Amino acid sequence: MYKFLEATVAEHMTRAVKSVSRELTMRELEDKFEHDDFNAYPVVEDQRVIGMVTKYDFLSCFAFHPTQMLPHYDDLMNRSVGDIMSGDFLYVHSDTKLTRVLQLMVEHQTRSIPVLDADRKLDGIISREDVIKALATFTKVR
Image (cartoon, rainbow, N blue to C red; front, side, top):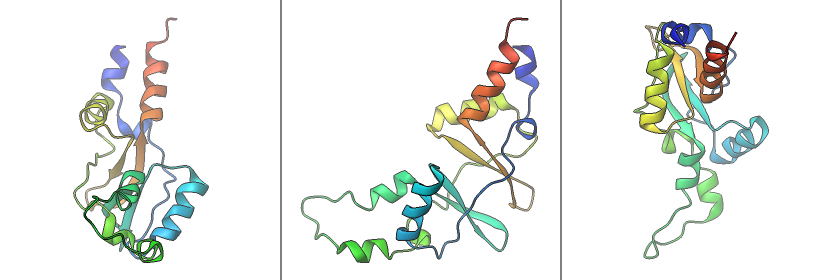
């Protein structure tokens, strides 16, 4: 267990990360969610992460109040990722301790957190599965 306390993101993150651009339409995003089976994508512009878009962001576009006029489905699906993404998002660095990542994931109920370098360029992503795998590795009875 003590080794887990010292483990860092760099040792356990996924480096081959798929990202999307802010110009991507919701229709294209839906296809990516279905094909990749991811819950979130970093939104990248000029090699820097400018936001995150999640399945929750996508679904929230379809949650209407009874007094609202319903937009046409095609109008919704032609909106861009830039319209629905969160520009204010959690991120960590590769030297962040996994204990801190675990804390952030529980506190913010998030499944994955992008890993950025000092210039906000995408280094990787750390997921709940990565943290669980690391925890299992370090807590095995030998």
